[in-house]
Structure formats: C-alpha cells, structure tokens
Image (cartoon, rainbow over all chains, first blue to last red; front, side, top):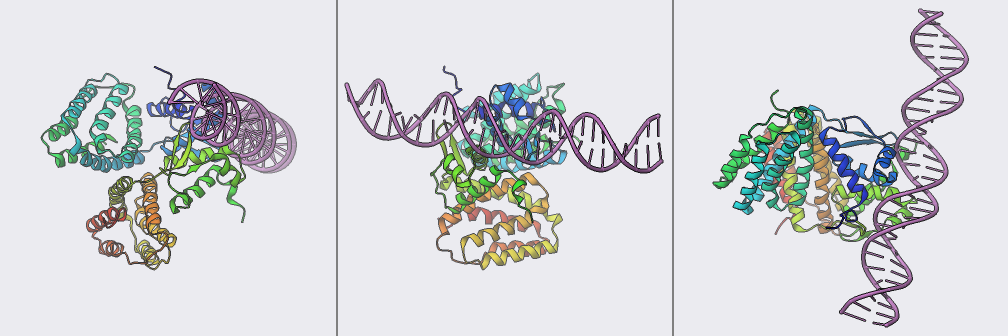
Length: 208
Length: 208
DNA sequence: GAATCCATAATTATCTATAAAATGAAACGA
DNA sequence: TCGTTTCATTTTATAGATAATTATGGATTC
C-alpha cells in the first residue's frame, strides 16, 4: 500500500486533523488558531494552513475575522438546536430517498454499527459507530450534496456530545436506532422517517 | 466614503466575483480556473486566489482535483433536483421558524420584491428579486446556518435559471409567491409552508 | 505503442509589508 | 502615594508577493 500523501494536499490533511481536534474538544471553543504555530507543527508553511482554515470556516468549525485571525467556533445552545433541526429534516429526506435502495445486507451492517454504538466504552467509539449507522442508512439515497451537508451538521452534534459526555462515557442502548431498523426491515418507511426525525432532534440538547 | 477593501480580504472579493460569474453562466460548467490567470486579472498573487477556490469548492460551485487544478462545477439534472429537494425541506423549516416573527412591514417588503420579480425584464433582475423575496420571509427565523445553507443551495437554482432562461427572459407572474404571501397574511402558516415546499421543488427542473 | 523529455500549471516555501495587540511611560486625578 | 487613563512605541501575527519545487499532460522519439 502506497502512502496516500500525494493523493490529497497538505491543506486537506491539516483541515482533517484540526476538524477532529475541534470536534473532540481537544481544541476549545474560542481558542485562537495561529497559522504559523500550526505550520510549525505540521512542518509546512502557513500557505496550506490558511487553505485549511477556509475549509474549517465553511464547515462552521472555525470563524475568521479578517486581519484578526481565526478562532475555533463557539457553539451555543441555539446553534446546536439549529443544527439538530436542520439535520432532522435533511435526514428525513435522505431516508425517504434511500429507502427504495436499502438491502438486507446494508441493514445487517447498520445493525452491527448499532450494536457497536450500544456497547461503546468511550465517546469516540460511540461517535464513530453512530455516524456509521446513520451514514449506512442514508448513503443509498445517492445524493452526495445532501450527505455532505448532513455530515457537516453531524459535526455539531458530535462536538456537543464530546463536550457533554466526553470525559465520562456511560454506555446506553439507543432504542431509537432499534426502532428505526425494525420499521425499515418491515418496509414501514414513513414510520422509520418519523422516528429518525424525532431521534435526530433529541440528540442535540437532551433533557433540559 | 472609504474603500471597503480593507474590510474583507482579497480572497473574499475574488470568490464573490467568481461565484457571480459561475452563477450567471459567464464561466461555463467544466471550464478550468487557472490560478495565475485569475491572479493576473485581479492584480494579485495566486495565494488569495487559491483561498477563494476553497470557498467556491465548499459552496459547490467549483471542483478541485488535487494537483490537477480547479474547474467550474458541472450541474447535472440530478444535482439540480437534489438541491431543489434539500432547499424545499429547509425552506419549509425556515418558514415555520420565521412565521412567529413575521411583521406586516416585512410582508410589504416581500410583496415589493415579488412585484419586482414579476415585472423583471431580464434574468439577473428576476434572480435578485426572487432571492430577496425568499430571504425576507425566512430571515426572521434568525437561524444563520440554515439561511446560509439555503443561500448556497439557491445558487444551484439560479445557475439553472440562467442556463435555461438567461438569454431570453420571458417575464411571467409567479402565482406561488402570491399564494404564499396571501396565506401568511391570513396567518395560515401550514398552508404557506406547503405551497413554499412545492414551489421550491418546482423551481429546479420545470416542465419535464 | 511505449518510454522519455519538455512545457505548463499546481503546490508549497520563503520573504515582506501592514495591521492589530501589547507593553510601558507619562500625565492626570483621587 | 496609588491608581487610572491616554498615548506612543514595540512586538507579534496576518495577509500577500515572490520564488522554488514538484507533479502532470502532451509531444517526440525510438
């Protein structure tokens, strides 16, 4: 296996690493991202770092004020709720589009991801499994832009999860996921969509 | 009045101009964007040009293949339909959120925009008025990310409109807009949402 | 038709100018 | 005398220009 280094650019690599740090909370909201520090760390110049910043900005993970630098985007309760609402309607749409293309093998994979999530022993494992579950069910919609937008919104949810439960993860079974799969297995798409939409909205700010 | 040039960066300015050219069709789908040509035109170096590219990429207006340059994103029928579907559910959501905050003065402004659209004599004027109409009604949702996402999706619709009707614009009255305003004036939010969602889906590929 | 070379363009490094922040000194008031 | 405010100076970081490097696509030759 060859190094995938030349496959994508340094800017992409930097933006992925920074995105991960922001999502997991390793980089705190509001903290400054200094281009030459990051350039030093990745052993490059500031040019690709700046390009990485532009992508993070577009993903809503960073905020840049001209001539005043870039900081990690802070996420208010309102912003988390907004993202959850958006994701709710978009995932509903995606599932309706994906439903005709769902196969049993996909649903088996989704079930595996669901179990991985239920038995996860830390936030990171849970988050990965959760994303995989949703992605598996929605990918057959074959709508790349819809999926990409959902992924970007999902990051807000992940950030919230890490910030809230990151330190001490308490494993718990996600009944909604079970319910969604049950409905889909029976071909009850509308019911599955209803549960999914409610489920996604709940992920944001839970018990208030 | 001072030049607002220092307010935002050169990269922003470039990305705005390029976005406009792509939307209006001045830059054709698939055509290559060569960084040093554009740098020459704007009398800058290619560094801010590359940053502008990153934003265009995030907006779905350009596609970049690493080491092979950037081209104007092509938009297939499927992509236009996908964007229309996404916009449909998102605008529905936005209108539901905005409805409680709508005032008669906002609706008067929206009516003015609607009339401007109905009487527009070219695609550009119509497009501006159309965007203004939608934006006026949705902005009171006060959900910045939702609005930004809708704007980005709207660009696909605009591109489609320019590509299809750009050369010879035939003015026609948009009954949906009238209907939506009527419903909102009567406080019939759900009906307004239904019409809006249908309306947005129709904007994409019309008569098939 | 395959391999090599060259031209072109993308990517990244280095260097420079300029704006913002920080430091500190002086002046003023309590 | 202590503290606060204001202004100038210095420091630091961003934004951009220029320069160097590296990959890619096409042409040319074998």
